[in-house]
Image (cartoon, rainbow, N blue to C red; front, side, top):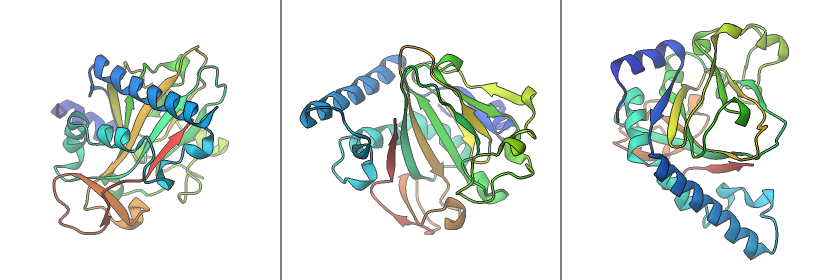
Length: 253
């Protein structure tokens, strides 16, 4: 399941690689069904809606999503793809579940996952794994190719200003916009500095994705913006991070 030399070259040149098969469609469907079963069970237990406050797994050691997220983050096929770019030793900084409900009219503006540039930033990447299909109508990701090497005037300066201003976004080349269309069980990976966005979900069904932030143990804690991590493959011989059995998890609905 590792990347081909052409895919590796494409990632470093363009800032992303996509169309990677990580799960079969049947396996993706099973993870999705399990998620929906957890949601239904929690709604019933609470006598109504599972409120946004309960979508905060990092605050609850026994949160119902913990094991589910952990299995996705450690899935061998996902890690094989990540290892092609980061090497055999892999840490997780944090993970997310992104659910874009049907009819949601808002999208996510152009942004980076970090304001850091340079060699150290090359040791961070984001995995986007679809559990449903994702296309423009459902608000799939869009990448601005080669933007990970682009110095954007007025662009992000720190982790609190990762979204580009309208003026900064004018420096992106529209002809380099890539639409990240994926089938269930397929994934993409993008460099933390690659500018990306997503549109609204205009369909009648959800868009559900697992998102993992992976990094090499060689990275500095300043670049990672965290002093802790979870080792999911290989060894940590650098010892920059306090290794935890569980990584921070969030759920954006």
